[in-house]
Image (tube, rainbow, N blue to C red):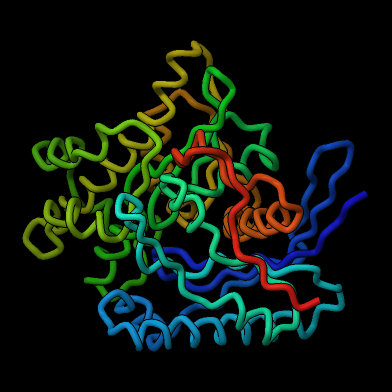
Length: 359
């Protein structure tokens, strides 16, 4: 029975921190089973928040230097995380932190040098999961859906509420489909920061406003939402195509924020309502990611869909992406498909990621 203990590493666009999850995977009767054995989020201090926020603006030399420094930083956190753990780790699987994502130009970069992580931890490390898919004319994203398909196949839809919302599901042809829906924590956190808050806890700020119909219409008519999957979003898109419509300043702050909440819920509900209508049945939706803890957002989503909403235990909510990137590393290490062309639009399915072998 194949079995692997893997450390999964994830840093999201919302800059909450670095998620580290030690996961166990077993292949039993051709079905994968998993457990999260231990997990922790290391919050970024102001130094790293500033470094990561400004990474796209620095010189080539400073960028390469940051790539190495961040790799060292990840390795140090992993070593500290594993100090009290007596389990032999077979593999580290690190997503890194996305700085550039422009697949139409075949440009993509996640910082956090995998070679340095392997060297400093003395553990085989897989990293750079997106580059091959983009070279094959894919979006390089989302990559989580194969994990949804193999680990969470008892749900019709898997919805993640992170910096962006993304969704995955099997279509009528039983092919996995997935795409980024719209910004979530990336925009909500930006509103919260104007009030010296890291995030809008339970929608406390959003509840104070009213929906602005004209603004809602403008947001819902952004060109991206008219595109068919495969498609993906990036910080660059958020700045160039989304941010221009919102007002972070008074007057109008609360109404703008409440309208953004409404927009998020509308776009998310549309993503599975169309599928439900076509299949004429009520479907189940597993929701994970940091946005799941925002009760106000979840309640608005519930009012706009007939789908059955399931929120799993807190550890799955918080660490599902780290868990799945750990799993992607296992698939890569086994030379098995970990990126689906039906999801990314690549020329064919592929096994993506650079392996740095120490032993």
